[in-house]
Image 1: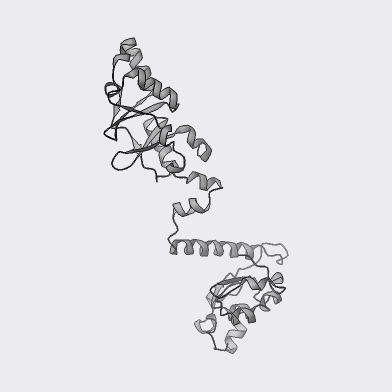
Image 2 (image 1 turned 90 degrees about the vertical axis):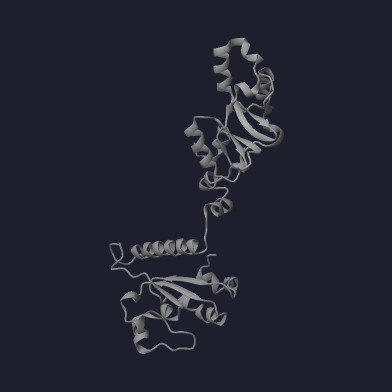
Length: 275
């Protein structure tokens, strides 16, 4: 949570409770409005991390390390680092040679330094917590990146929407099932397991080769055996890559035992902004 120090002294400090960690940013380390918060932060025994312009990394070890609880700062420490850094449990060095401002006054290089160090701190914490792609997708469903990390299970057609025929189904009924479900493909099921698929392209090629005699064939005689499949928990991006590799527009979603759970179509991926 973000808290402005001026608002904090007028009541927003109540947001801070034990168990929190305060990250305080001040180029000088002597900002009055931040220093006024130190007494309450210490009373709550909340760990304090600071980012200041103090050249802490170049100081002797004794002067660079802020005092522990109950320890008083020595004269070397007081003269070497700011009040805020001296009060911190962890003081981070955001010192710069000079500001980019032509007057050397406006915070420019110093704010960029704090931004970079803040990003590094956030990434390190993310790695430490074991944050994964699926966590990003779950917590970022509205953004473009979140959409690109969508799971197949959230996009696939399921239940009665999935076209199904048996190996013995005549081609005329296969065409009817494919037309009714409008996915350009049908699964061929035998014993509850996927044994093949028949696509619109398969039908066109078959009719060109056999003519009307093709209508006497069964699904088993027309299907593509051992078709490519994907599991429901895979990313939509993985499904798209597989479709591009196989040059297909529909992909069967099945578990490890080849039981059909759904079908994901190329059109279903358009909303993910991957295309």
